Length: 601
Image 1 (cartoon, helix red, strand yellow):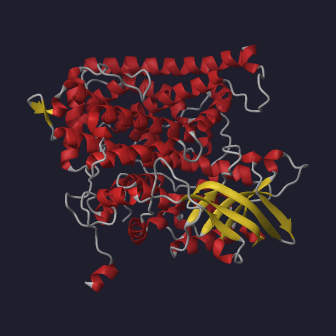
Image 2 (tube, rainbow, N blue to C red):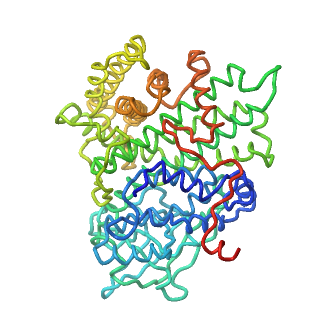
């Protein structure tokens, strides 16, 4: 029987055991120690491989277990809450998506078989020292030569540059007469097939976070590869790269959810046991509200992430806007939490003790990298901004659609087909398109035992206001485009995106997250319990000016106490901070024993 995403998460939780138990392969104690030594977490990676983590990146049609995008989200969340070094080191498996997007049938069969044998540790070699995110300016060459390609150049900084078995890279195959966007091709290179001296690792670089990851580089010198190493057509490299990034940016939300969970869990656990002013520290109103708001942000981040995973199945061609919005907004929700929680910890935030406070500091450092991964926040916002005119043009012209499959977490989905992702979705975004229908559905609701007339009236007002906010933002897009000052080029750079459009893109990210929360609430009220159905959490989320921002005093005292109580109940019950019930490993639980370990015993 096929497992749901929550069941799969619980299975991996049981496999890995309690991260508070030092004897486990991925424990908080060992994660801190390895981080201090800048050491790759080999034991943790081996533990994941024994679980079969790599199989969830190979499509079912090729013998793997990749059917649901949510599976990858939930598995990533489980790992990242323990150690981002493990999560980031082993989740490079996701780059094999490019074989399913751009590879032919023979390539897909070959790479699937190799992955399922556990023989692939890929790295993504796009970045070059002198070009940053400007991939079109890369100087790495892949010169065609008698059915082969000769690779020359260096890629840096990249994850797993030295320790990968396979390299996904962009190389220039065109010449000066080839249009810039068609000069590069994509290759998936097996390092074992290269002659000695043709490929070498570039030394690691010290990093603020992810100190145990292999953030380094790879260099090729006259390396000859067969033409079969090329993915897609010659000159199609940049297009394939962008298509892959739209998927991986969306999956980055699992990393944020994992680190966000542990930061809130660590701080709330510490403060619950600390006595100040004749009571528990978490009973201080400011602390209670800070923790409640951080919990609310995680619920919003979860809504954005879960709906995005469903959208990857249902509206795959629309992720040129959506993938960027999801990555930016979820990272912002968690990053804001990290700052508020650090402030709430007070002086303890500055102490590097080998207790859970140290784990908080590590998660804060490691989680911050998500806003940089797979395209930094400015790069993602720029991509959204460039597509705003198309979004403004198509909004409101969508055909009548049943939005239940997108938001109902019980609804069956078709298999995930990553090859359907498109570089340009022509301004379409299913979340924004669904808002008018969601507002109509909200208007048709009647009060019930969970959501009374007053709260339902308030939710209807917020829903109508949300629709007005979206329409006003899209109207601003047209205003900016008509302003001559914003059309004038004031620099020699070809990158002239108006900061005003970037600002609209930021605000749209907030609206997007709120719409997903509204949609999830409307379509799941009957089966996620009283706290969810009451909608108080949703009302508090919709009341925020920007989804990720909150200040002291913005929550009513009663709402703050009830949000805090829900968060505290999930913490003490050993559950994820989630709208759904997802159990963590039992306190003190040892990791599951493999067949080899049982035999040895």
